[in-house]
Amino acid sequence: MSGSAPLVDAFNRRITYLRLSVTDRCDLRCTYCMPERMQFLPRSEVLSLEELHRMALGFIARGITRIRLTGGEPLVRRDVIELVRALGRRIGDGLEELTLTTNGTQLAQHADDLAAAGIRRINVSLDTRDPALFERLARRDRLGAVLEGIAAAKAAGLRVKINTVALKGLNEAELPDLIAWAHGQGHDITLIEVMPLGDVDEDRVDHYLPLGAVRDALERRWTLSASSHKTGGPARYLDIAETGGRLGLITPLTNNFCDGCNRIRVTTTGQLYACLGGSERVDLRAALRSDDPDGQLSDALDLAMRIKPERHHFRIDQRGATPAQPRTMSVTGG
Image (tube, rainbow, N blue to C red):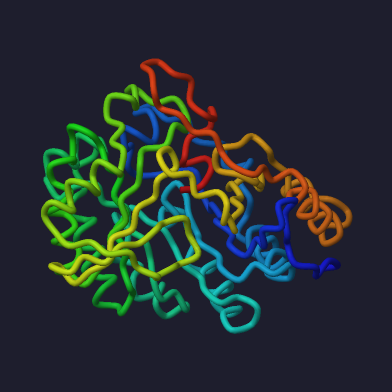
């Protein structure tokens, strides 16, 4: 790549973390994430694996040291392991870490390949261990496959972090048991406030659960203390004395975490969103497919740094409220 200057935004934040979506498709239909009749992108609009690889190398050349592959569900994309292997070869050569976020349904068959390719830790989305509630939330009866995938990842030597969206009146009462189960399995777990992205079939305000209330309830049960642990993401971590494990909290609504933002996101169509909750974007696909892809991509990244906003403005405070952004999380990259 022609440019080699580090990526620094207008607020002097050094950008070192890329969340790269490899597909908008998913084999689940989680109620807070997308509608049942989700319209996925035509395959012709999606970047090829070769384009995703070339783009990632361009980011590494500009100082990106961590890449997380996301979706949709990244493991439903055919031959995605080839991309993982190609990027894994850059670990120790500009790239410090390659990670992946998955819903776990395909993990059992891919865990060994992911570990062999250089991935050392993964995030698995799991909102409940109750089969009936899982099927209600995901609209698919796949809990067994997810639990099998988590076990396979552990057996392959991958560090697993469970990501759980906290949902009032749904998994709210189960959260302590889910935390205790994760810690008993040797996994960290992070709770996430539901994010107002995209139109779904339900009103998110019905199930919005502020994590401050969850923390208060947990402190009546356990001894919580602040942890200095950091992963490069937005979670703030707590240690739980009684379980011996670590709990992360991601609070995009109640405790904005933008001051230390080091992240950008690229969709599977090559649209760089400078902020999860913002509309500011740069078309990297056009740059990749231009007559001067290296130069155009570097220029596009410079533009992204100029337009990255200081913070997002998420709100869930009234029924029928318009989502912060019309695109769903699966389009943006989870």
